Structures are given as structure tokens and as C-alpha cells.
Length: 125
Image 1 (cartoon, one colour):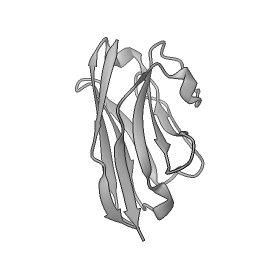
Image 2 (cartoon, one colour; image 1 turned 180 degrees about the vertical axis):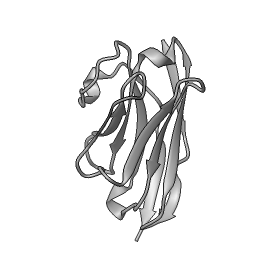
Image 3 (spheres, one colour; image 1 turned 135 degrees about the vertical axis):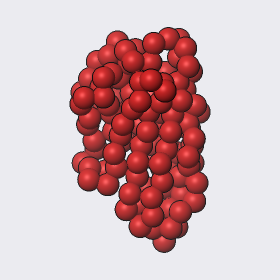
Image 4 (tube, one colour; image 1 turned 90 degrees about the horizontal axis):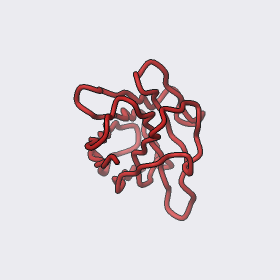
């Protein structure tokens, strides 16, 4: 079992940046694939980015590629999402998720085993 706690959300103007953090506790963090998802108002949850257990491989949704960067620090049991060039359409609740078997390349929310409570990101125009 792992517990995930996101932080770093807030209100920023379009074009600005935010860095989200997700702190994990519980079972060995370094064996999990970690990902960020988001859920815009009135829409379904969608994949944002994922990072392999070692941090060597990353994957992004096409709409975030080049603007968002996912990374992890296994010594600190933390995964990050650096978001630059933010747009109003990036407004959403952002969730951290963990896949316990270390599988990589999956983007379905249902494939992830543990979730944080979410952090609100609001981008003003």
C-alpha cells in the first residue's frame, strides 16, 4: 500500500508556470511507475504524463509535450510535474497515481492502483 499526497497547485495567469509535487509513503516507491492525470471541470480524467520506476523513461500526452516535464526523486519518494506555458485549458484537478507492478507505457486511469486526493490548478486568461 502507498499513500500519495499532491501539493503545489494554485491560481496562475496564462503563460505562467507551476511545479506540482507528489509525496509517497508506504511500500517501496522506487518500484512503481508514477503518473499524473488531470480532470478538467465537467470532463473525464485524462492522462498527462508518466515516468518509469527508475526515472529513465518518460511519456507525455501530445497536448502537454514540450510544456510539461515529469520527474522523480526516489531518494525523496517524490514525483514532480513542472508545467510551463500554462493555458486556461490546463485548468483542472491534477492527480498523482502509482502503478504497483512497474508496468510502463500505460495511460488508462483504471490501470493505476493508488491515487492522491488531487490538487487544483486554475489558469486565468
